[in-house]
Image 1 (tube, rainbow, N blue to C red):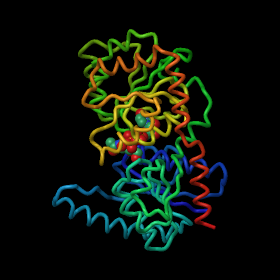
Image 2 (image 1 turned 90 degrees about the vertical axis):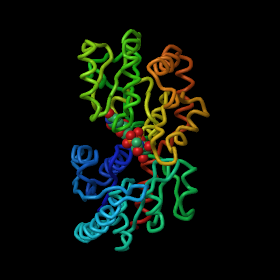
Image 3 (image 1 turned 180 degrees about the vertical axis):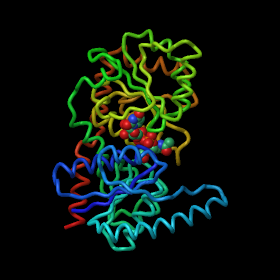
Image 4 (image 1 turned 90 degrees about the horizontal axis):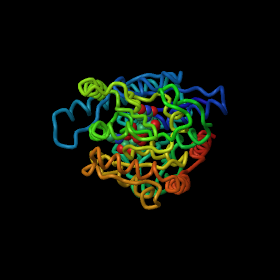
Length: 364
Ligand SMILES: CC(=O)N[C@H]1[C@@H](OP(=O)(O)OP(=O)(O)OC[C@H]2O[C@@H](n3ccc(=O)[nH]c3=O)[C@H](O)[C@@H]2O)O[C@H](CO)[C@@H](O)[C@@H]1O
């Protein structure tokens, strides 16, 4: 089987696609893949690391306001559709799968014009712009939250879940934390602001750093690549270089880290939430206010309603509110256990199987 996959920009669109590819490779070692992304997105780092054949298109997003750059966007989109058609004719995939981001718009649209079977995967509770556009042309739409169904033609929608949940749920505890200078046998909190980092979380984190450093639990904190230099500068200026709290720009082996932590603190990106519920981890969520239709608040809703997660509003995030929320969970083992059970109950544990089944249905 030949599968062409496209999803780009942020980790939340890329990791589910990579999980699916890793899964199919195990079942069908003869399957061939081609991943189409952009040179600017995180996919150009994440995908080649997994030895997945990778190629790029030049494309950019629409500005919501009237803007001259939208003319360039349309030009790049049409050019990318043409290039995608060429790629598809050369690679001859049995199916084309889009997991979101502008690049998947051009690739999946081109595939639909060439009558190649197409699937899109929507991670969020509210559909993204690209997937909404593509929903008219594709054959099947895999969703992760029931609520997303209302954004799409009903006959195409299937509740699939997020393949990252199944990937992490299948992993065993290990000594992965030692690589970060942490100990295996101490309760651990992981803090990060999505795949690109979040300035607001970084500011609160630096404000709460001294407190976190004095706790019995240990903390691993990923600032995001683009913010790391500023964080390092702050640490040097405040003579805080040798802390118990461990700080890194980005965690490449995140699935290994997640299996070994006791609490996750971060934004409410859909793929992160799938990992959290896949593993049944408690969380403290700070939904980003800067995303389309406030979708992160909606992503987080059922976890918060079921007491699987605490939430801090972005506008109320400070060093103090952050430390207090983390303390509340980490200093109460009973609470952690209850949150874990509720979190696990929210997950879809066989998402990759379901998505692969959809692929088989379309290709047979
Ligand atoms: C600002 C923005 O538009 N965010 C969107 C984006 O977020 P973003 O890309 O941040 O998405 P998620 O939080 O869903 O996923 C992040 C992914 O990156 C991984 N990771 C993160 C940090 C790190 O150091 N190492 C690492 O591997 C996480 O484990 C996870 O697999 O896509 C999500 C899924 O469509 C959306 O729900 C988010 O609203």
